[in-house]
Length: 182
Image 1 (cartoon, rainbow, N blue to C red):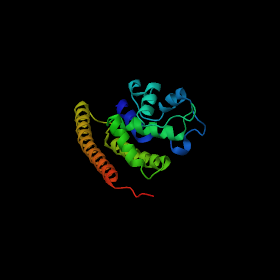
Image 2: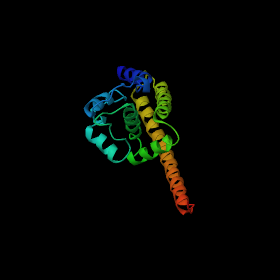
Image 3: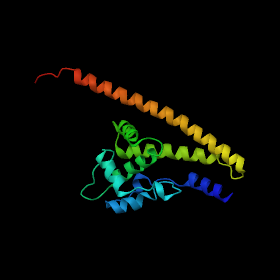
């Protein structure tokens, strides 16, 4: 089937730009919106980034404010991460995960890690697709992928709950510690 060949090709070959391939100059918001359309695999226009979404991510502190009116490599990397994660997590939980992962790391190092994990996942799924599937096999594969996604989402959300509770416990313990008078 031609559609399956196209899906397999895109899953095995399309990847977000590397840090080094991001533009070296700052981009205006409308340029960022256009640029991000090429960053992720998409099969519809419904999933596209908008200026309002960027504003909301900044307001929710998921994305740093623009430098003047220009967005840099850090913004492009973070938007890529947010757009992938929000497909399976709430924006709040995506923010928790990104904040947790960025503790003690810089954005470039984390983005490289993120791209590696994404590449492995897309390559794995591409390998599962058989271009000779009939209708029943398509349905079975879609069902298996959906149930697997459900199970992984459950585990991910529980891990995030644990991260949040550990962070809150750590913050409350620090708040209880008496400060040395200087």
